[in-house]
Length: 293
Image (cartoon, rainbow, N blue to C red; front, side, top):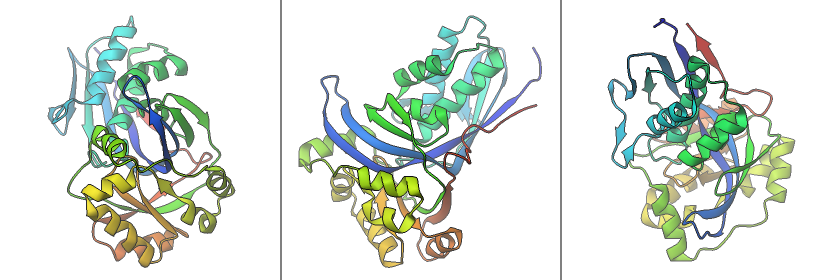
């Protein structure tokens, strides 16, 4: 067994819009969303070991909701790879859990990519996306490390040309489970947001001033009705000068759009629990960086 070690950054994502179209017969929801990676990332390190295991900061990879998605990903790839062996997957968490930033999915995607390399599985992108789709709806999008348009329950992806934008990220001391957010949307009947064509045009053009007022998330109203802090944070961002603000994904994190890096730092300095982040766009990909030692 060699000492080869592979490191990957598992980047969080934000949703510039999230439309919930309907409930599906399989229990999921039909959605549309523009998903972009941001600079906030977990660190995933894989190395050979006698058995396959995943640890988060030295602890077994368990969460209150059950198995960690990175462990599920490791086991799924091991089943599909003839050359799979033991491995230790270590995750340094920086992305908030249940924050609507796809942290668990990012960890799963980074684990698939790193183990595919470590084991020499030579699984192609389509195979990894198929495995990822069985693990979680966001995993295929996180595999690309690039802006994508997501539809279906998350399994249908199309590349999106989105240049860099600067954001302020507000995190809270609580998380929101995705099944709860979608169930509240069902219960409250808050409906489906507008056609995103204007938003997509502004995003593609890199026009932050036009994009800000067009940001929306169909899950925000039902989630904020149960967690008023989310709505308050979005209002605080707007009142502080953000060009737009919305909850990311199923929550709980809120993002605000800034004009540039200096504006993002200025906004973050005035709001508790806020930090500046960047979505570097399709030509500045951050999600695929890896290292081998």
